[in-house]
Image (cartoon, rainbow, N blue to C red; front, side, top):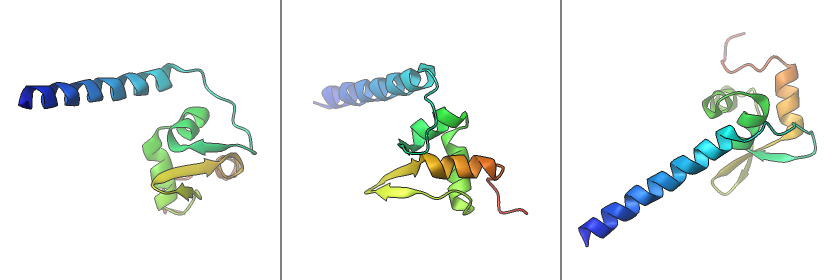
Amino acid sequence: MIANAATATIEKRKSKTAAKKALRSASKPPLTPDRIYTSAEAALAIGVSTITLIRARNAGHLAELRAGRKVLHSGKQLLDWLEAGGRTSAEK
């Protein structure tokens, strides 16, 4: 019983890792103002890490949309943030 649970946990981790690798190796999607992006898609589209987006949101430089626990970004907000310099800290 315990061995089955451990095997299931390992398989779940492998599938998450494979999904992350597939997302990283995917071609860079275009950033369009009329699209909604998940954090991972947004980070891939603009060429930054997801932690960079989190830091920008926490500092108040990047707006977010929420759908339950999922954090979303509009393409327009991302483009505006990039045009403003893509700041991630509270420094001026």
